[in-house]
Length: 245
Length: 245
Image 1 (cartoon, each protein chain N blue to C red):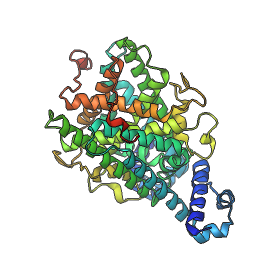
Image 2: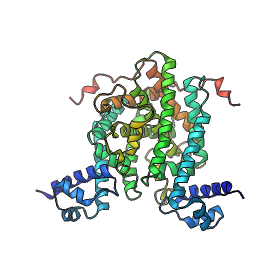
Image 3: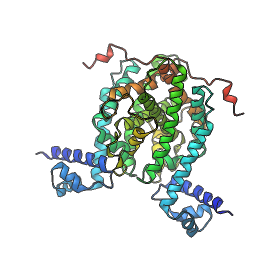
Image 4: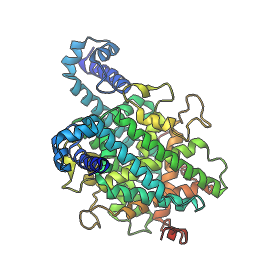
């Protein structure tokens, strides 16, 4: 078996174990066993637990960014279609690879450097991509010449933060997941167990389909962005606003 | 000086040092020095570094939730006013206490349990509060009887995620901040240094005022939610959607 193939098998196993156990509790023995290789071979190929974890984060981050980029419709498509296709790509990918998402969202940020830097770089790429889509949409609409660069950057931050939160919620443990195992997936669990519940109207394990989650965010985001760009911002009503005076 | 007052001074100092250095790199010597007390007194009052960190997270989480609850206009105000006042409370509080926010957003989630649990509990409270506001708004609008519980929960997750992301961006280091110090604030730094830039049109250190950030999110969120509730969801255009077929 070629080294590259075997290495990917090791990374597959490592992603599954890191997602389930968390970085610190994950054992190289278990990873080797799941990959069907000896532990010395894992060390030979990936050097150390730290390097293995870094390789997992990098692979999952690159796969996620590539999936979103591939999903975004071409530049001549309307901006809302581009965003919609990108969101579908994001939620489809994170739903297909919940362990990869858990490693990125829960694990990579929770162990300090150098892992946090890998996550931050990925996040910057997504924020930049979304900023470009929003700026393109603003140019397309033509009617709001004063959507400042800072506003575009802020809107992109809001959208990426909303997408992260929703992916954690949609892919978090549904009662029997890894929530209890060393904190892995615990943030997703917060959504699943929150006061508003997640089971209402849901089938099977209660996780919404990726397309439904994407549509929810698109509705949340775009109808709002659309109004903003067409010069119809939300305004506070006068009256109750002075209550506290 | 009463013990309670002295304890708050220690927590003030600890929050500042944890925000600047990160949990692991923070030294009890530095915290005691900043608090103007001896290190044994810090241990006497707060027991251990872990307990001190837990106390910081819990205090800052309770203060943030209390600030948001206090800011939300009363239940007889229109739902959009309630949300707007809550968002202003959230961004005003996080802007006034950037160290507290850094401890919550960057540090509490990054060291596993029991700290993550403190953060998760706070986040659940905010998600529940936002869910209630969205559900109230849906009842107020009356025209969308089928905004399912799961959709409300998802929208609340999206809004809280967007708010977290924007608070990190708005309060992150502006070039000379703590980004280089052991990962503290690094996620905020990602926004500040991202491709879209943050300086455009900004005065001083480039950080947007809290009210501006709140207005940005309110516009992003409400005009979208409002459309949704009034039965005007966003729909993909046909045509370009089939490009990939």
